[in-house]
Image 1 (cartoon, rainbow, N blue to C red):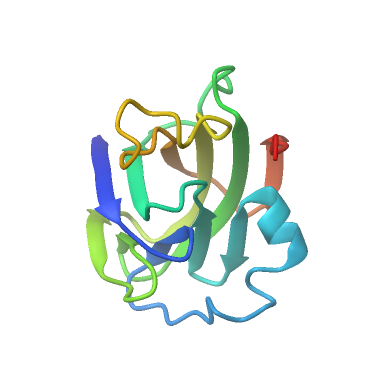
Image 2: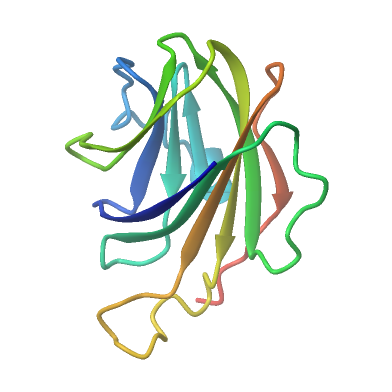
Amino acid sequence: MIYNLNFFTQYGQFYVVDKGTDGETDDLEFWSDAALHERLACENGILGVSIENDYCTVMGEMEILNNPPVNEDSNADHIVEASIEIKSGTLEIQDCPLSSVIQTVALENGYYRVRVSSYNLDEAYQGVDDQMPIDRYRIEIWKESFSARKVLKQWISNY
């Protein structure tokens, strides 16, 4: 199933969350130097996804897969994966800082792998309308045993 994402968030981030998880997302350990560089913060039951634009806009999609993706998207600027454990039976996409629920998905309890592919990061502000950034985010989720965060493709900023 594919879910379109188009929402307002702040502080250059949004969250993938096991419903009911109260993580310390403002903690420096959550957004460590490694998490900032790798564009994904991890804590029990919550992942923080870094966005590039300052207009507080998230555009993209989330897809629940039956199997791991076969290939990485060569068009993506940055690709990172991490695991999340679902204990509530519900995965949520939440904004920052209010943790408003943007999207919910019923999932069987267990560990899932979350891949975040980021696009147009160098050109985030070069859209036709200067108020509408063009960076995009694709989140792919599939059932898989726990493993640590891993960068599959590292983006290096041009500025």
